[in-house]
Amino acid sequence: MNDTLSLAQALIQQPSLSPHDRGCQALLCDELQKLGFVIEQLPFGDVSNFWARRGTQGPVLCFAGHTDVVPAGDSKDWLSDPFIPTVRDGKLYGRGAADMKGSLAAMITACKRFLAAHPGHNGSIAFLITSDEESIAIDGTRRVVEVLEARGEKITWCVVGEPSSTALTGDVIKNGRRGSLNGILRVNGQLGHVAYPHLALNPIHAFLPALTELAAVEWDQGNQYFPPTSFQISNIHAGTGANNVIPGNMEVLFNFRFSTEVTALQLQQTTESIFNRHHCDYQLDWQLSGNPFLTSEGKLVAAVRDSVQQVMGITATLSTGGGTSDGRFIAPTGAEVVEIGPVNATIHKVNEHVEVVELERLAAIYQRVLEKLLLT
Image (cartoon, rainbow, N blue to C red):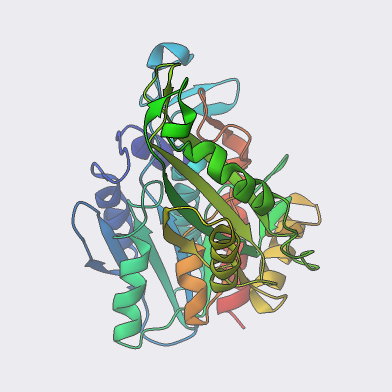
């Protein structure tokens, strides 16, 4: 077994359901200490985080990622136990194989090989690892970045190991992400019998026109980097379960995925103005998961694209699609941020897996990025 596969298997064996780490970070820290990294543990609440750095000078190339995983579901639905890493037909199966324990293992391998050949490299190499990416992401990367910012420690370039690829490792590089804004709406009505609607107030009937109007708004047309802002209702709940009772209230969950053409404040103001025109009794709470960010084509993007070309023989496509990532906490500090990792076809699914050969190719890409940024 090669080093990358062996470490990936060791990480998958730990059932690190978010936000718990279950010993994964200890395995990573042990490897990094052997390479001369100084480890700083930064736990917050139930979340395990660490910042590791080798070198004291800039520029700083940081590898960022998470050890936590989503639940595996019923293990009977898997071809093999999700927490017993299994290689079958050239693929490594297990929860976290693609998202993102395989990437973490490839990062370690890349550093080992780079440092063996270039112990006197320029600048510094760092790792920012959390166990709170798959859950609420409050006490993870966000808090570590706050610590770094408070003491003026800056990341120059950041490579996040999220599974960005579509068909082959490196075919898609995420150089930004849309913003994500959640709304939690409660509309108040009056409970009553369906046969006597004049004695009740149905919140669904009262507020449906407002939601219909909101869904029809064209927020923007996007730009060359981002698709148009989208609005989606994810859940509506009302009623007692009886078919003869008018509900007394309604709860609605909705989300905006927004581009750089609009701000979270503008989305909130427009939404509330629509709701207010309909004169309903409502409460609305907002949760901003993250603002959009974009890393324009520069040294980091060029280094990653060139590395993919050299290792894979393909031209990577830049994309800002998909969900959010912890890159949203790092980019606002001024760092250039990209995400590159394995194929994402099976992430969060039953029988999550990654091609073993792709892990080695990913390690080679990471190593080339180190060479291009810290040897010139």
